[in-house]
Image 1 (tube, rainbow, N blue to C red):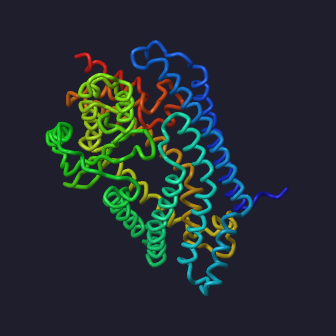
Image 2 (tube, rainbow, N blue to C red):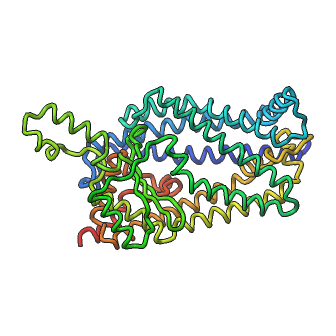
Length: 461
């Protein structure tokens, strides 16, 4: 039996590693599913944090999500394997060439050829992923009370996302390919600088010009909360310029908050579902209570039990945590790590791009298109490195989260952050019991109990 060629060795090594990662992930998910199935009662240490009803809801929600993730992951892995084994990538490249030939473009138009290929590939990905996205939104999320979308809104949103993505992806890719083509021996430096500029521009314009295409952003009205946010920002020299509330409830009742912007132009964005005074769910509860309550109308809002979101002090504590990431330099550190990684990858790409056996391993025997080289090297050849890097970043992220919690503690927000974490866990149906290996590998945020334990001593003071 003759030895495998270099091309075959590369191909089978890529396939083998992909399946090893899948089996590892499936094993970890199976351990966590066992936790969901067997932990049916609130553990003693959680008795003061979660009531049995919420605990059971979160258990069933996470079990459904985990089961869905197993099947969607298996499909994704099988689809990727079939695409490689059946030569789907060279087939799509040749199909793109035939389309261009009919339009009068020859093989010398590699960049245009690459854009047609990219458009077809992303369209294929969107269509094959659509049934899974529909099931996740209208079965899993709907079943557990999170989905707020109609079918019409979902499809309108999906089409809009696809078009906006193409409007960004295609021009950026064409410029990147052009830079690599004309960059000479040091093209990897110019390509890296270009992607750095693009990432900074996208971060700068995303919330002002891209996000509003999908969600409504309104300035947080003047009042106690806005004044308190501005005062807290000023106390730590955070250069806050605006505070927005985003209508995230159109899609989901999950909640979030973030900040963005560079230098002296920082903005804070709060999801309406995070704020108990803005959450539509609470307004509906108030209306329901009003319909069933015969007492004087002016007393009704005070008698309504809030079902979702945090009060003002808890929102401030959550923001204290988020601003801690800025004050402690976590945002800058993440950017630096990302860019060092990006430079390293482009440098290694420059070394490997001339290896014809890499292209031959994936069915490209007579040509070495740059876009295909980027796909093969970044997605397949670098996959072991990417797995190690992802795990290291997860460990670093957990460390940053503890540090940001400690920062909020030092602002005197321990008690309110403690309460907010419990509320957010309840609102998002987070399950507070985790398998230790699954948690270590996947959780970029520490488990709830660990965060609460770190806050507990300060909370009692």
